[in-house]
Image (cartoon, chains in turn red, cyan):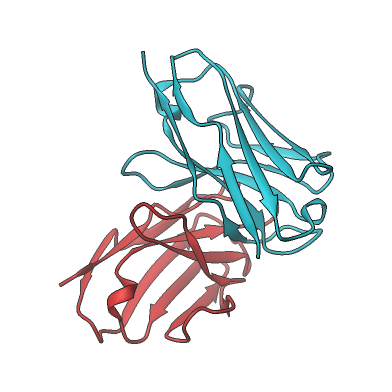
Length: 108
Length: 121
């Protein structure tokens, strides 16, 4: 199975900051990578699919980049609603489509 | 409006069985692959199982292979997860999720609210 590793595990930031989260795959997943946001007690929400495509309704301050084994999620100007946990997930080739361990974005 | 509503969670003893259900509405259920994803208390997301549009192909995480069975009833717009030989480590919130594209494999664009499975004696 392909392993997904996110860094950092926790990130402290302030409103207005530019935030970058990294996700690395143990082997190439091409561009078949998604990013999700999850708030406590809620289901995950799809933000980005195919590495860089913004899901409908998601604010444009979210962006994704990368291909192969290294990917980033960037929030250009952190907003109060963005404090949450973020997960990457690959969906390359054959299941299981594993998730990263998550990155919690906290208020500094 | 797409809706996914899970049910069937609850308290079960180690070694017991449980069947989770996911009622789908607001889209052509038979055109989308479906999934189960779980989250243990305080932990991250774990892919559990997936099923293609007609139920002919199913996939499982190694942690549940041989104990869990995913199925679907396209006539009733229902997704199921039959869980057997339950262990303490299966305790989690179980989410059903929809594939992001029809007749294909993609990211998960809609999720239910989750149902809690507690495994304890």
